[in-house]
Image 1: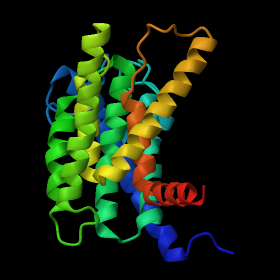
Image 2: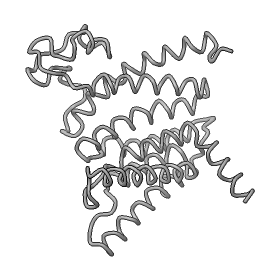
Image 3: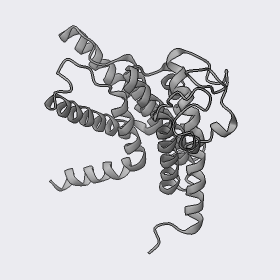
Image 4: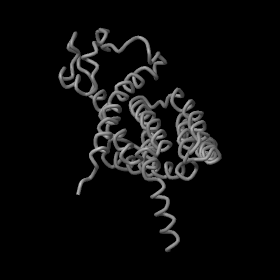
Length: 266
């Protein structure tokens, strides 16, 4: 039995190639957004010697392999982040098409949230910052997309998701500051979950939070047991929320349905 029909497989491959090109641009965003630099100018260049990259050196994944991970001009090493982000974007774009087909609203949301999640995850993992340049426009865009005809998430559901997610995290931050005297939730996380709520609606926003907290707790415990972290060391929460959001995007309705069915049968 074939897993995919031939037309679907061809289109999935097209989405993969498109995703790798988007991933190449995401690497620019990952490097420049924390520095508040333009993501348009100057053109892509070597971070070591400043040489402008030729088109042949800017082909996603392939250029990295042909150059053996080094700059053509100065032979400085190129981070593995570049091909990995391109590959991840291509795979996720392809999976989004396989999952949603031409359900335009779900596919559109996927093609917005996947790049946003990858950029946020890498930046937060590396320097513990979630750029406002992603989350704040994302909140507005999520609400705007819900107003389009045929949207699978109503405007009121999107607004509820934004307010519920952002409100819950803001409450955690306020209570933590009052009781513990320290920040229990960063402002970047608050705005990020508000963005996810605007795109996914309140039900899948709650699922995103649950998955994010579960992953964060599990990874934190493992790192403490391995001696890599102690209880006071911060763990970037943005990547956990991004994973939760993508799981909720792809399988949220099924997971919520299974959970409700389980609770009814208890």
